[in-house]
Image (cartoon, rainbow over all chains, first blue to last red; front, side, top):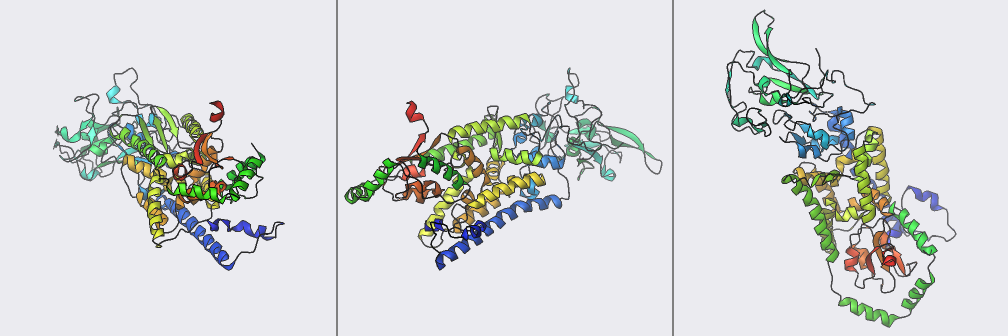
Length: 294
Length: 325
């Protein structure tokens, strides 16, 4: 423990003037020990700060935005306010929410939804993740000082089909977390005029969805609910929000008529259409953080 | 409180921020008498040394502490795994049967980064503050933090290797922890990201236990390897801002370790097992300012010294309780 008596650091030069008590001059060995300790301190400082600050790199080089749970603040504010506790993960009835890993840098431990694997189907009816959030990262009421992304604000509160006949049929959501887009129209079965028969995502798919006709309260496996349609409209059938998507007759550039899924303003970006889409890869996808454009 | 005790109380707060403890306190007459007595009673001390040689080593407090630490972390895991909703969340923020609990350092990071405080955050922070004022500040470190347990095991490996002369402890300047605390607070405030939370081994481990392991554990592993081969208990001693935050809470906590001068014969075994030996400077021969001295706020109340002390000179104590009873 003799090391403890060795003082080092920047403050030392100021104290170098002899005190009345008079510190004995340090031996050569002590001086060397002190110097080594300064070097080790610098090493530890560099290591810890380097590791900490390197968490910024994944944000800077991110290829794709994460889809955050419903009610999430905008990405920057979300990352500053999320305390990384995972309480939102714990309350989700379909386990749609996962926590990000080291590759997300500062976002490590923050919740996100991989809609293709398991989308948020609002099985909880009340957006439980927002209720669970202790810091307001997921919120019903965004604080006034935070700006609203263009197109993020919902024209009216979205109606949850499952609650359509209830006295309060809406989801208390003021902003959307993204918007569904037909990103691969060429592969969409409806556009090709094809139907669909069988399990939407194959027998091995583990994703769950609440089917009102099967069980009002309990989500079941998508694989346990095969479809049979003349013209594929799985995205429309599965969508939990009223009037968010429909199959419409559209005109192709060459003037020919065909059917196509069309996304409407009430889309909240939950990702159920992306999960259920039977083509591989999905023809319809959620663009995280995207606003509504007419 | 004697003037020496008062001075020491203030000095121990300074020592928590990284200064070396002072040695020149005014010593109370009663304590002086004991110091003098010890100097002149070699036979008496020899007799005590003999008794000490036959004293058996206990792990009472260590076992209790490990049990509490493992149970607390297990409660999080079980709560989620079996969906019993007892203790939901992770160590950074949770709900105990519905009551918000929020880690003070994580809350601070979020408040500084986000610059907006909602009621739930405030309630949770308040609850945890009261909890650790009662139980002693850094008690969180040794009785709850999962990294502390891993670091303790890594320390055992380090000490084994040190005994074999394969490694030596390479101490680092203790002021570094204060520097880190300030740097991470400023980083949160300026960048708007909770930078420290990304590398906090406490948060990483807690989430890994509850939600499953991930790559972030590599950082924890790197820290442990550093501690085994280079700097004994590097993270807890010299780096972790969480420890400093809870240490500050410990200043006003009534639960602490109390040192009784009379029976002690200054062998320093307690300082050898201690995570923060600067709080035990008072056990060095001739240093104790009074017959009874409270150990400073940087103490994690882990109880290793209580287990190690062959004379019972170090004991858990609640301030004022003995007067009440």
